[in-house]
Length: 255
Image 1 (cartoon, rainbow, N blue to C red):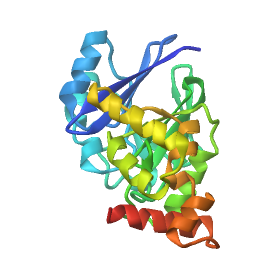
Image 2 (image 1 turned 120 degrees about the vertical axis):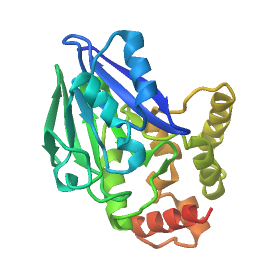
Image 3 (image 1 turned 135 degrees about the vertical axis):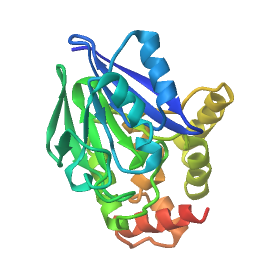
């Protein structure tokens, strides 16, 4: 089984992703921050769009849908529980649903926290999970609608995926996330090395997304609430992992 994933930079720091099952030529677009760069990427490859997955309702993930829908008439999928806030859906999804993209099967995960009813899609045969603003490269989304506990649970779901899974998150926030991560985990050698690699990639105009889950587990502070050095730095040596996560997220909010 062969899959191709194209990363499409949009707006100032968003990403859309095009997932294609090469055997069947079936194509799915994940999020639509703006139409023009996505249309250009599709045209350059001679591809259409069969499905669009909307991870959550924020404008910078849905506002480019109109021209894509007009051009290709794809089936649009999103969370059933958020249908009232999303563009009109053809496919309403709940956690545990399976979505077929040709020969590829995606499993829907409820990753509420950044918003309520935010979803991610795990596609094992593509070695990918599309996480948008939940788990992000060296970070996680700000908790706007859900609770800290919900976001912690959501991150733990994704942390339990196979460690070679690639995390396709929705923004190029990695450099700023690295600065925060270093402020709470300054002696972590893998984080120090990653920060240098991020700086070099961005200086060369290269994206830092996707990232391997194994790297996130080793360096992303929001997946490292169990770490003794992080806990000591926060003054929370005996707190639960959920409490440490919440303290980290609050600290990042004011960083």
